[in-house]
Image (cartoon, rainbow, N blue to C red; front, side, top):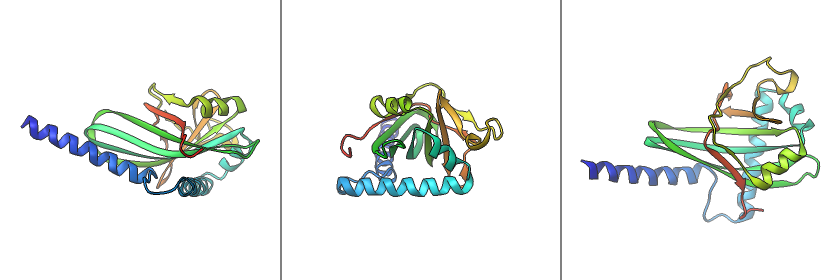
Length: 193
């Protein structure tokens, strides 16, 4: 019985990795330029969706030092949860795009797939630069509830995840009322920059 369960967990982990690779935009055959194109396409689709469900976010992003858009797919299989994704940070001052990755994992009971998009908004150029150059890890419990009206104007609907950093998290149904980023590491994609 234990051997059967261990074999199942190994197969489940391999299946989760394969699914994550496919949904996170990881393509072992695609060229770097094709991968950058797919990430830019995901960014445009995500921003279009965000502006549709929360029009004031457009002004929030335009007035910011920069922003980062990520596509994330998470999978829970019995006792294993894993997530991976890709994204791009954009410096509003220079117009430069920096391609990035994200990964998270943990232990917990559950089954299912969670697919969402995240848009980080950086109030300062220093905060954006630190995020790009040093990466960022949301290791503490970073679930936060969105409070419409808790902030004025454009930032309403965003969740503050660090000083000077807001996050819009989108699902297929619209703006998420709770952001889940704990245990997630964001870092530069050396293969695409």
